[in-house]
Length: 49
Image 1 (cartoon, helix red, strand yellow):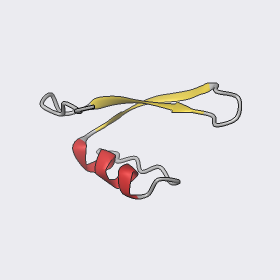
Image 2 (spheres, helix red, strand yellow; image 1 turned 135 degrees about the horizontal axis):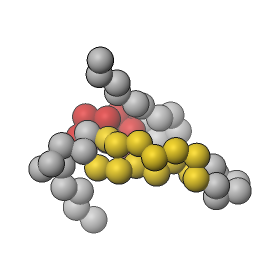
Image 3 (cartoon, helix red, strand yellow; image 1 turned 30 degrees about the vertical axis):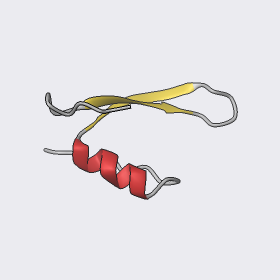
């Protein structure tokens, strides 16, 4: 799968592991995606003022 960051952000759906409940919809840029891929059990969210 190829991710397309040409528009800046991609959607990221956060799901609870055991129940499968959707917890949150966020958007990731390429930097936050790379950090999440590196730290597989932690989530990295970037926020800008």
